[in-house]
Amino acid sequence: FSSVARQGAAAVDPLVGLLKDHQRANRRAVVEALVQTGDERMITPLIQALKDPDPHVRVAAAEALHSLRDPNAVEPLVLCLRDQEHLVRSAAAAALGRTGDARAVEALTAALADRNWSVRKAAVEALGWLQDARAVEALARLLPDPDHDVREAVVQALGKLGDKRAISGLVALLADPQSSVRKAAATALRQIDEHWEQSAEAQSAIPALQAA
Image 1 (spheres, rainbow, N blue to C red):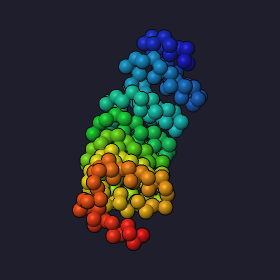
Image 2 (image 1 turned 90 degrees about the horizontal axis):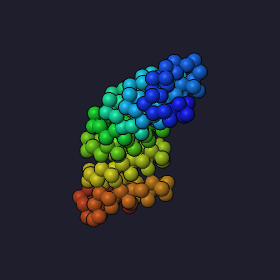
Image 3 (image 1 turned 45 degrees about the vertical axis):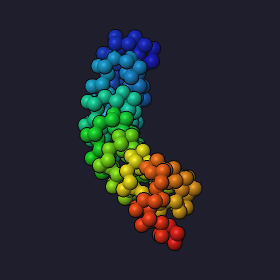
């Protein structure tokens, strides 16, 4: 399919027809080939592929839309956050983060409660990319997440957002059992405020840290 994709715009219609192939591997390859055409007409069939019966194809479609950052894909990707397969939900969250579209914030915030750690992590990272202050409190509530990869992602996202409301929660993670989380928390605090130790938020959190 890559050889067909090299034809550019002329390849779009033939490739779209192949999205109905009964072999899931072929449909997934077609999705990947559509991106290679570089033609804007690929957006609609890629969005349609988000509803493919096979989760591997749905993941490929979400990943393709991730790289394209098209605003028309936002609402279909939001719907994918409710997909039964966690790999699809993760791919959709990642793609939404790259759109830069504030319409995704509410749905991504809800995805922070997903039962699967990889989806929570993807949603956290997406909110970090979007840098919308509405997400700060929801992200801060996720700082005690049982998965250390999620905690680290939350810390990094809060560092990007640079909101002082996150300081007290980040101070607590300076005592996290995972060294990478501790280092990330120290970095995030400096990103938010070089003199974070002097802030009222830190002063209220430091006694608990010292007692930990």
